[in-house]
Image (cartoon, rainbow, N blue to C red; front, side):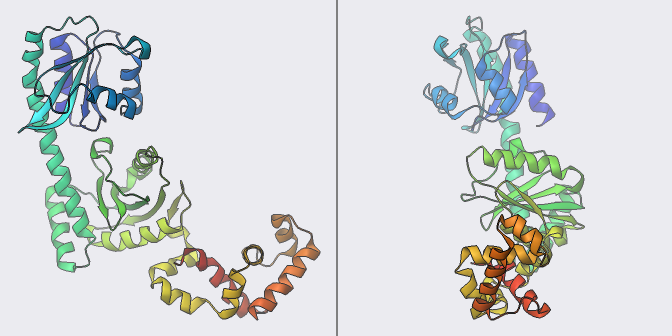
Length: 362
C-alpha cells in the first residue's frame, strides 16, 4: 500500500469526522482509518480479511456505485447489523478504481461536506491509476523474462534493473490453479512481482521474504475455492536466471499436492521432468512390464512402497497394513507382471524409476 493512499484516507476521516475505508474496485482493502469507536460487522470483516465478501459486494453494487460519479448513500440494514454508509467513488479519467467508504449511520455528513472530500478521491484515483499501470507494466516485463527469445529476456532484465523493481537473489514461485485469473496486486507485498504465463501464476519474491509472500498469495487463490499447487526455485541469483528458475519451479509445482509447497531441491529423481517431454520420458522409463503393472493399482502401490522402503519387508507390510505372506505373494505377482527380478539392482532401479515418474507423466 502506498503511504500517500493511507494519508488520503486519514485526511478523509478527519475531514468528515467518520471512520473511513478505501477499497479497490474488486472490494479489496487498500487502507483504512479509525475515527472514534464506531464499527459494524461489514467493516470489521473487511479489515480482518482485507476484502469484502461477495454478498456485501453484491448488496452495495445494487446501489449503482460502480457507475456513480458522486457520493452515494447506502442505508442501514438492521437485520444484517450493517450501519449506513457514504460511498465516494474513487475515479480518474472517467474510470472507477475504487471506493472510499465512511460510516455515517446518523447522516451527520452533509452533502456539502461530502463534496469537499471529492478532491481527495480524485487524488486517490490518480495514485491508484498510476500504480495499476506500473503494476501492469512490471507484470509484462516479468512475462518477458519467461520468453523463449533470449533477446526479449535480456531487454526485460535490463528494464527491471533500471526500474529498481527486482533485487536478486530471488525466489521464483509457480502457483498452479485450474483457472489462472491474475492475483490482485494490491493484496501482495510491493516487493513481489507477479504475472500469469502459460496458465501459471508466476511470482518473483525477494529471497528473504518468500515464506510470507507465498503464504499470502496461496490464501488469495484458495479463497476462490480452488486447489493450489505450489513449486519454488531458490535462490535465483540474477534476472537472467529467472527463465530457468521458472521452468524448475513449474516442475516442482506439477509434483506438489494441493496445498503443498515443493522446492526444486527436494525433488530428487523427479528433476528428470525438466530434462525432456512426457512422451520421451515415458518411452525411456516405461517397459511393457511396468505398463502392465500400472494397470493394477494395488500391486503398483505395493511395489512403490516396497522400493521406497529400500526393500524392507517388515516395514512395507506394516505401511500397507498387510501380513508378510500377503506381501510375498504380491511381490511374486509383481515380478511375473513386469518380468523384472526384485533382487536385481538394475531391475529394481528400472521399476522404481518407472513408478516414480508415472504419476507425473501425461
